[in-house]
Image (cartoon, rainbow, N blue to C red; front, side):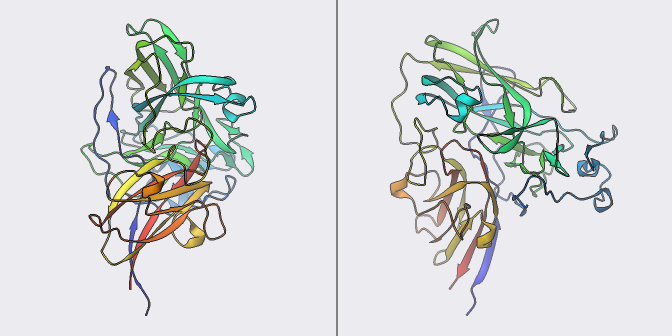
Length: 391
């Protein structure tokens, strides 16, 4: 007898957010919507992008209408514009060593040897009325000059998207400077609480970049180069400053909210090691058995007695991925360590994309999905789908 399938679509995201304005203290951000929907977007080649032509898009203000052979045309000034804001969250202080040939040294993020790092998430919601649209990094085999190809990480970044500085508490002295970050801008998940309906359909990926109105892009603290090197900074209180779109290369409805500050305390010694698997790894680590460098996607309910399948693997029939992600499933709500995992996957169905099957946990009939790069810190995309099969 064939199994009856109950399908739920998910968006890859972190669930802990703080909305920060230009003041010092964060305030709780709106919760993410558990009903976020992910469409299956082809992830196999940056030069081959399924973008509708102008005749295929009904909305005259859909930014994808602007895609033409060889690049983008200017937007219609009468159409709604995006508005990006930066959010700093989940600060972590860490000491680790870097080899001279590591990607982070070669890309100018840090120096060889033992270095102290101030890590944090940067979340950039699009709270404007229109989509931010960058388009494909490569169109008809011609690279777009706004993007740079990271030879170590093997994908395209939008140049100079974010700038990080560590400032004195008075804000008039720069104490340390971060690597000028280039981002792959995409729809990570919906950013709720904006007082209006938000589209449930994910649109943009690293292959066709942008941020949907009402969605956010996440750069997790565990990613390579997502930090400020504070090796020579004395202990004390400081302010982290993050600016996005500083040169206004992206058209927005408001540029006055593109800067954010977050107070931080730098102690004389690093905090003791924790068992939090979402903290960045203090050394090179690979595979699913590690207990660091994971991102919480979200917790979901399931039906007792059913077999649940979760994955971002088109070859296995659910979801899509880019790069080399890994996946861990935990019982109940929240992250878990390797010893307590319900299921884990690195590669599946003959590909580098993960997929797992497991029985619905008896504990509250809920489970939490975590994702991460197969190598901790590496960039990846994991656009998940989940299903339940009844016997």
